[in-house]
Image (cartoon, rainbow, N blue to C red; front, side, top):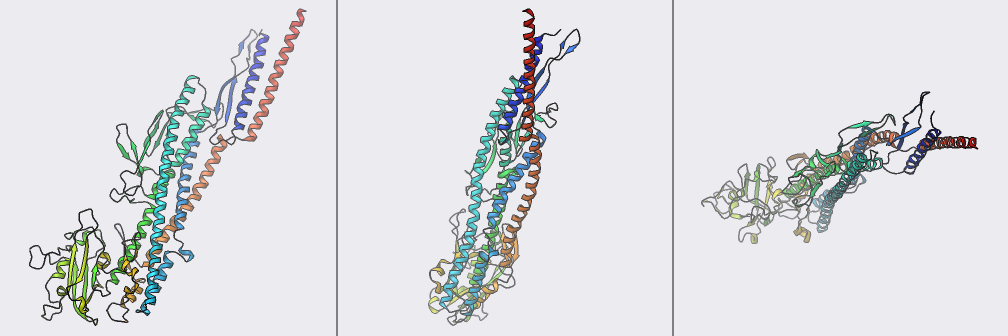
Length: 632
């Protein structure tokens, strides 16, 4: 027969199993609010039975393991939806911030200032000699310029901010990835030596993996997934060889850690590039492959492909908005200056340029167009005394202003050459009243290939200014070249884009120089009238290699509409992603999260089991007392 002590052992095993059950349940309850904690369960089975003459007798209960209720497949979906939500949340917040920079729907901002700007040109056209109108126009021009440049500055600041955030996030990713490798070592030590489950260590690793995914995306891989149906049908845990990949590169390989590199050393604008450094120290750029998490959102907003020369991104929502604002500013500047060059003056000097006199104008990155423009000279009474058409085609360059007709190397098709060419513009046989007799063109090359200090100037020849002569540039109506606008000859606006647009400093310092006239006579308002008409005309806007043809208002509206629709689309996308994340989160929590009701039920169950096992012990004690009493 079995020993009475065997019965005592059975009672003790039940007592121990109940005690461990209470401990695990208490641990679950204590961690009900702990982020990343996975509820645990005690797995038990019957101990090996004792063979008796009468048959096989039970031998109590044995604790198999303490296991986490964790489903790897559901967890992966949870991590994936979490990184999508973090990505969308970040983009939504940045785009909503971007939208506030275009408050045109409230009657303020760039469009409102543009309306007032053209209204003042109309008032100036009605009163072309009124000094007060000139002051008001100058002030409104400055207001429009400042609003435009400040809006651009806000976007570049936002761009710089998200770039700085990326540095912080990359450092966090590297720190957490290194911590995971340390956890991998600890998990392996616990599970290979004692064969216990390192549940809490695995929870920490899972939480870090979630955090990394929210920042940069990534996928984890293991050599196998094991189920544990006896404990819980929902259990499916990874077994060994943990690897974490980001954009196809292993940043964690078991206990090995490969940090993500980040640098701004080669960037003129200070933007940061991401790279993966192999064991042979080869640095591989991989930011263009990162799509997930907050860093993926940053790269999509800021731009992932950086131009090595300018340091500016070549893509990205924020950069595209900046480029479109620059295109808007450039279009406004060039078209305004092209008209203002019709106002007669005694000298013109261009903006600085970065190309030399031998480069074909159409091969530069400037917005020159094939066609022709006229140079017109007026006498003191406003009469035209000379006119010459200057042509621009695929071969036209600025030309060497040190050469004259008849000199070796003189190019009669260049801008300078066409002006210097001895021709009878008036057809009167006179050799002293043609454009080459009035205008002295000088083009100064940039000091070197990297400089932006070349310039073109037109001036009256000696003694003609004192006689009251003036001249102007009038672009062709049918095949406009945009020459005066691009070069900034006798310009109304200084600058070349939204970044540096402002009223010509000479006009700002002396508003009396602002002219509404085309012909140098009192009361003429042809230039001011053309400025008013400009708001209704289609013009060309250039964004890198793309050309847009629209009115000034139409093009600006397209910028605002793009920002608005992009933001709205992200808000809708965010709602969808959030709903999906919440559904997956509920599924994950239903498997792994602690339920207080369930744990209290288990606590009562283990308490009852503990009491029952205690009753076995007291019963065996009474039996032993009876046996001892028989001897007496």
